[in-house]
Length: 318
Image 1 (cartoon, one colour):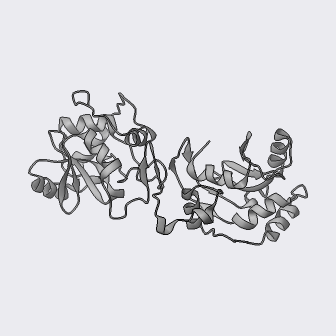
Image 2: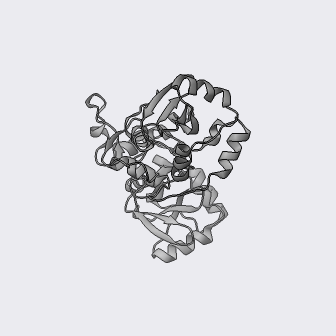
Image 3: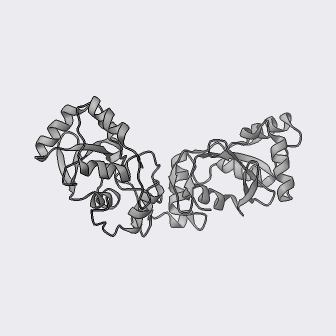
């Protein structure tokens, strides 16, 4: 879209788009989209939509879990979301007073995005409204301004989002210095609460029966008593790296004592499994001092304590 003056995006908008795989001079083929929309809906693309989709087509944030890098209105720039919706777009075009070509959806799929021949972007489903006069302004509004019916519980802070401070709901005294408010929120949603305590005996018994090399130490026992059994389902960009799901269940390594043993030799201290991350691609282990390690073929120190490890995993911090 070189003929359109690109405004200065906010730091968060720029980071959201870069995290979604956009980059300057990005260009993707759109022939298949044009054919599919023409066949299933009778849509005829105009130059403005062609330029937009060439640069932004395929970008999506609607599968990201709310976190530190997230648009206020999650979007997907893919015209195929409107396949078979020719009548719907005809109605929206009539309301807008101009022909709209579908370019995707926003509001987590609850609203269509359509573009006029002059590059203006409209949004809606049962009714339509002008979102912005240009595509670049529309990006800024989707990330920074547009609020859905269930807005994210975060507020912008430079190039990332943070939980807002509500004095009436201040948990700082309860949280103390353990972790951030965001980490606390995610853990509570997963089922953790202060004073949580679950039995670790079954995990200890099963692993030891599978291989006598599995010997649960006190640090792992304390950690699993408080956090064992929790699963965090998340995805999307984090503070310094992508966030991925993880589960705190030592039995994920039930048949892999040899792998854990090799990892222990690599770091020079005995490691006990406490869970896995990234859909089982990496084990989470803990040494007798409470330090948490992360890896499979290679292992590295994630954090010196279990609390810090949880915060890094949840916030996407290296």
